[in-house]
Amino acid sequence: MLSFDTTTFPVLHTERLILRELLASDAAAYFELRNNEEAMQYINRESPKNLEETQVVIKTMGDGFKIGQNAVWGIALK
Image 1 (cartoon, rainbow, N blue to C red):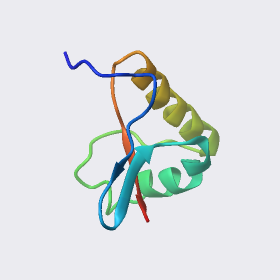
Image 2 (spheres, rainbow, N blue to C red):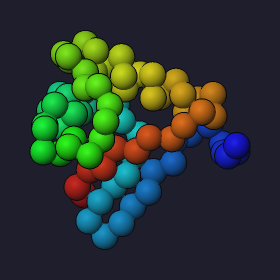
Image 3 (cartoon, rainbow, N blue to C red):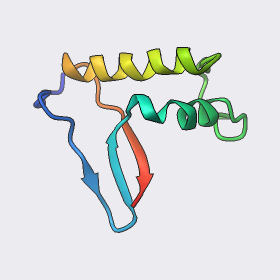
Image 4 (tube, helix red, strand yellow):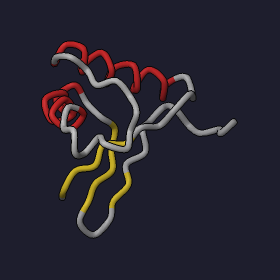
């Protein structure tokens, strides 16, 4: 099992991108991505049905980080 500091989500920077924690404010974009058939064609995972369900998914990912279970980054352009 991986061990990492769960007090602060790590933010990674590249020349063009910022990799950061997904936030509740990302729900609309995350919902759109997860419901895009072309984008999800190789990912066999159920998509959220609405924005409320999307917000629950994002919160669950954040809670998982806090207990050391996962680290799920959102990718944003600088």
